[in-house]
Image (cartoon, rainbow, N blue to C red):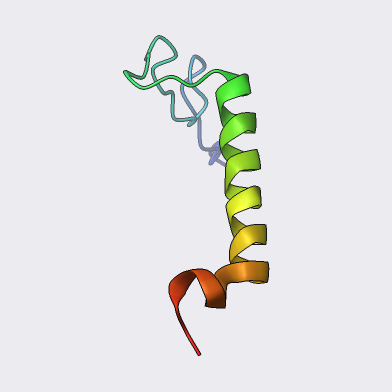
Length: 58
C-alpha cells in the first residue's frame, strides 16, 4: 500500500504570514485615546440631560 499522507512545507505549515515591520502613518498615544473617550462621554451626558434645550426641540 502507498503512503497517502499530505505533506506540508516545513517552514510555513500553511500559515499566512503578514509583514511585521509595517508602521502606520497614523499613531495615537494611549493618553490621547483616554481624553477622547472622556470628551465623548461628557458630550453624551450633556446631550442626554440638556439636549432638547440646547437644540431647541419641543
